[in-house]
Image 1 (cartoon, rainbow, N blue to C red):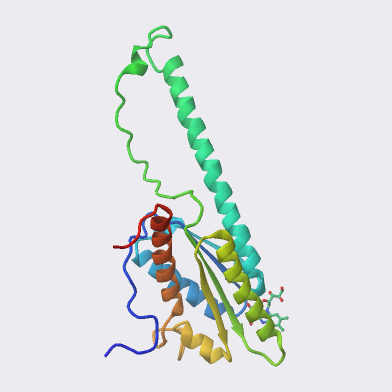
Image 2 (cartoon, helix red, strand yellow):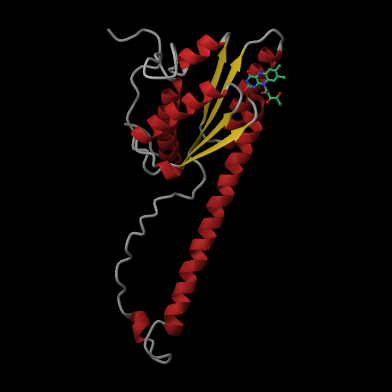
Length: 226
Ligand code: RBF
């Protein structure tokens, strides 16, 4: 029987055209590393290419909301710059055709000949703004009130950034009462080797990023599931 509690079966989507950002805190590194690995594993299983997963880190969870906002802005700048550079390059090659693409400077015939189809370069790295960002952090409750304040601020901050930007910001923040709970949710219950057990929640976050990235694109184009 399927489990009553939990995310249900993940939908399958083609992530091969997506560019995904992962931004993670460094506090509680062992758990964080496993979560980041689990996230990347499921992104790749849904077709996202390694070169289209961009990973950045920040000191702690409190830094995540602002960093997500700025990280996305940086990807937008990259996207705009590469579009301009691509346009200038194709203009330049057109001018090159007119000036020197033929045997003689006065013979423009060469530039009018049909061109060889462009060979694929093998470069599959996308440069457009991120389709989704996954924010990952692990807050472990201590003796003071820090846990409550940070958890509340980060949760609200990530939701606000997501709605302000209009892009999916996947909530990869574990708010656990002790290390054991954190290890279990990173698939590290009982150890970090082959004996490790537990569900790695990073895998769900990768799936959510691909699903939302694909659906947001479709919605942007006015396409709805039938
Ligand atoms: N950051 C985390 O990502 N996880 C934590 O469990 C965590 N616990 C903290 C506990 C205390 C007492 C303090 C002062 C900070 C903690 N931080 C934690 C760091 C916090 O998110 C942030 O990086 C720093 O407060 C600097 O802005």
